[in-house]
Image 1: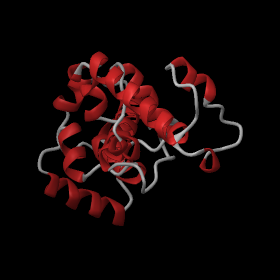
Image 2: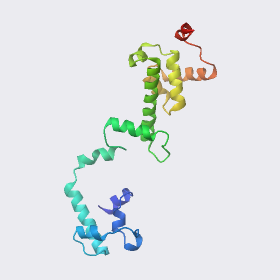
Image 3: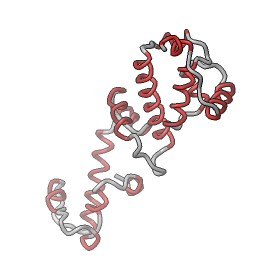
Image 4: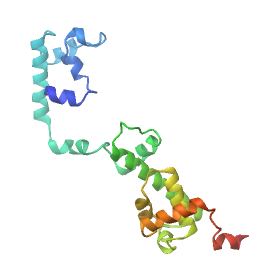
Length: 190
């Protein structure tokens, strides 16, 4: 690997193998690995030769298309695997995580909330389309999404099929100032 790549990927142990013995952990044994490459001694020249061997091997075995998925995102795997990762990361992302990852985590959490609410209401996706934009249950879902996620009002309005995000923003503001009135369906149950 060229030295530049080593610096770009600080979690690799390669840097320790290429470092002088005084600058690497005492528990690290480089003799076996160097020996595998036909390098007899742990010297500056031997470590440079080792680095050249690795770079030659990388070039010979490298298929740029194979590595493309790793360079384009934060995970590698199926959408189901991605959803499980996002669920596990919920609430644990910090400033050091990318904006894309934080947004995907919020979107995944929002989707779980929506599915739970649809199940609770015994609604389907079609019901989101069928019910009016100002339906109290849709407003309640939108309010919950605003409270519990970082999704934008625009994203919530689009996902819940509530029309203009500006209109939804006003409704959420007003709903926050006054207690919601029971829906016609809820009044009929009483």
